[in-house]
Image 1 (cartoon, rainbow, N blue to C red):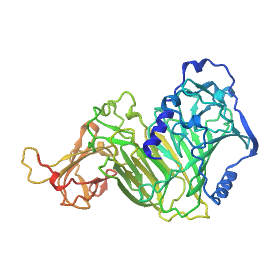
Image 2 (image 1 turned 90 degrees about the horizontal axis):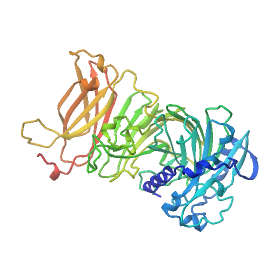
Image 3 (image 1 turned 45 degrees about the vertical axis):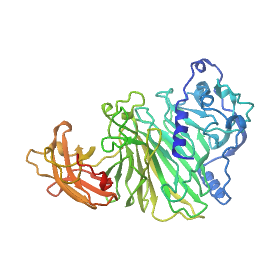
Image 4 (image 1 turned 180 degrees about the vertical axis):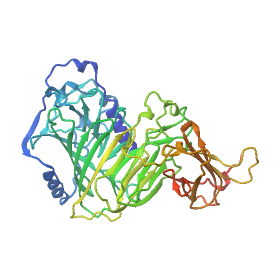
Amino acid sequence: MDRRTLLKMFAAAGVQGIPASALFHSATAQARPIGEVRDFSYAWLKGHARELAGRPYESHEGDLPRSLKNLSWDDYQAIQFRPEKSLWQEEGMAFRAQLFHLGLFFKTPVHIFEVIDGKAQELGYDPEYFSYSGEEPLGDLPEDLGYAGFRIQFHTNFKLDLAAFQGASYFRAVGADMQYGLSARGLAIDTATDQKEEFPNFTAFWLEKPKPNSAKLTVYALLDSPSVTGAYVFDLHPGRNMVMDVGVALYPRTIMERVGIAPLTSMYQVGENSQRMDYDWRPEIHDSDGLAMHTGAGEWIWRPVVNPRGIRVNTFSDRNPKGFGLLQRDRNFDHYQDDGVFYEKRPSLWVEPREDWGEGRVMLVEIPTVDETFDNIVAFWTPQEPLAPDQEHLFSYRLHWGERPPVKPYELATAQATRTGLGGVVGQEREYFSWRFAIDFAGGMLDMLGDDANVVPVITSSRGRIEITSARPLHSINGYRAMFDLVPDDSEEPIDLRLYLKLDDQPLTETWVYQYTPPPKDQRTLY
């Protein structure tokens, strides 16, 4: 399973709309329980995951009737959940849940349980939950078939999703703009290594029936893969930012050298700083435009993402990080001009650790893409020490989905745009190749500075020569623009850059970091 397939899976789920005919059905919204009623708690789930880790992994991918394995795209889209069958609809709850059907890309059955007052019972498959207008018959499907996942709606707007869990361990949510964008995962394993990447599955969910008038929904999940099992708890708190409190207990079957905690997955094709794929009529195409980090030492870092020519992996070592996330800072429609998918409304996603995570690193993976259907940006935290088997490994964090992260640099300006292009002095013939960087900062104290303020760019480079540096007011954004040229050496290896603005010895901005890959010498055109 690759990221392109996973993104198509999400796309398939996202276009499942509400057929007009379904709005007029009057059947009651009753779950169809099967199996025994059992005591349930998070402690039980952790014990179950620990016990499962002691057994060999057993895959259930493809455990489907033949009629579902062979569904076409059109036939799968013809399966629609009836909204009047939504869980908790007739009980006046603030939340509703709808179930995703198996088939097409979704070939691993997921068992979904309802939890009421500490008692859990599985929701059996019921064909009456769905309307179907496809060509190929679905056949007589068993009540223990399972589902592909579920979506959640909230009483502020029952026609739009609040969150969805579907496909491997992927899930996504929305903020006030009610617009899907990037995704999160339960766990990343061997991402961007010489090993084949492993995609764990959420194989079962327990949806806890919310209390009347409650604005919190709790979801539990069991994760399983060849390398690890896990017990997860998600507390969903809707608002202008959707807040998810996540608790994780992992039980490795083997030593796990590269594990990604709180992995985020997004897309970046073209933007102001990376126009390699600039053949589209839209000026920018991306779900996220940068990785933000608040280090354990208190430094704020902004790393614009790019669409590279080859896979790039950047590592940011840290101890007890305060937070990191993939953000969509550019909220200007004019920069995208897409009135169909509205990239300017895509949510940012910020990860806030709830305890000390110790030594480790934030990892950023950038993968080449030629179109927007490919999720090519991944970010996660990986502990310095491998996760050992026969042990419990606990993590907890908070996810913030929305237009802006819940925290920002105190009294520091943030990078608003990064632009790059050929360097040199306008009007003078170029004698050698150089590459220009223009970084716009706004916020903090920049709009308070006097005309005579001696603002200086502090620039460092791992290789090459820096020249033609400047920092000057940019009144259109009440900020400053920093500019410099990089003259690379003959190597084609990446060059790491860092920049911030200061007044005397006082930093004025967050730290902008970048990785520039020079073109081959024979392609360094001077024009």
